[in-house]
Amino acid sequence: MISLVSLLVAAALVCLQSGYQAYAQIEGKNDLRDNLQPNIIPMPKKRALRPFINIAGPPPESARLIPGTLLELSCEVIGFPAPTAQWLKNGEPLTEFDDVNEIMNIHPTSLARLTSKMIVSSAANGDVYTCVATSGVKQQMASTTVVTVAGNDEESLFGLEALFRKPSKPIITEYYNEVFQEIGTSILLPCKHFSTSPSQVYWFDGDEKPVFGNPRMRILPTGDLLIPSLHWDDMGNYSCTVKNAYGKDTVETFLYPNKKQFFLVTVN
Image (cartoon, rainbow, N blue to C red; front, side):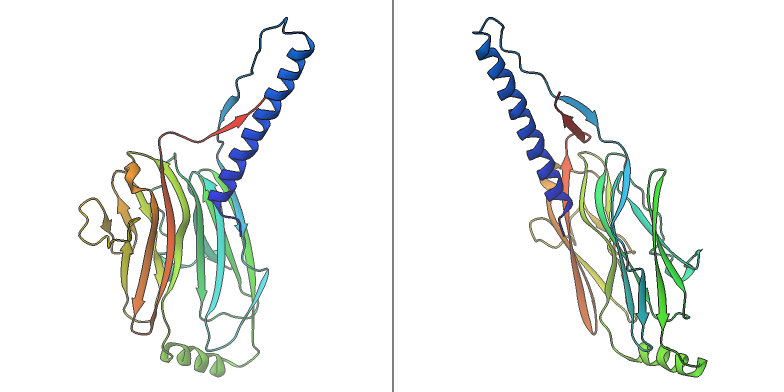
C-alpha cells in the first residue's frame, strides 16, 4: 500500500511538473512576441491544507470468528490533524478496551496515518464492530459483521477457555505509520497492545538506540512514547516492540518534525 510519505512526495512532483509546464508555456509565448514583453513567471499560490479524514484501509465487511482463535480487525486512517480511532460493538463503546479508546492529545499541526486494530476473542453471530475515525470535527466509520461457527453456549465457553490457555504473543493494536508535526511541539507516539499475559514495551529512536534513559523522551505506562519538544534531529523511524513469554510484535513509526504548517501549492 502506498504510504503517506510517498503520497506527499508524489504531490510535490506533480506541483513541480505543473510549474515547469506553466513556465515553458509562458516562455513560448514570449518568443513569439519577439521578446517585446518581459518574461513573467507566475508565482504559485499557496493554500493551507484543510482538515480531512479518510479511512484508507477499512476492515472487511464481514469476518469469520472460529472458537478458540483471535479475530484481528484492522482500520487504517489518514487525517489532518492526526486522527484517532475508536471501536464500537453493536453501536456501543467497548469498555473492555479502554486503553484503545483513550483520547490522545492531538496537536493541530499534525498530519498522520494511523493503524488501529480490534482483537475479538468472542462474539455472537451477527455482532457488528465499527471503526470510528475522528480528526477534529470530521468523522468516518467502517463496520465489520462477525460470522461465528454455529454451536451451543457450552461449546462457545469451551472455545474461549481454550483461547486463554493457549500461549500467544502480543499484538500491537494502535500506532502511527507516519506522522508529521511542527518543531517545538509535544507529541505522543502510540503503541497500544493486546496481550493475554504480562508484557513489556521497548522503544528505539531514529538512531536505533533504546529510548530508555533518554532525558528528552519518556515511555508512559500505556506503552506510548512522549516527546515533550520536537527537534529537527528527532526525524527518523521509531520502533516499538512488545514482548511477553510467548513472542513479540514490532511496528515502526516515521516521525517528521516540520518547520511550519502544511501547504498545498497550486499553479495558475
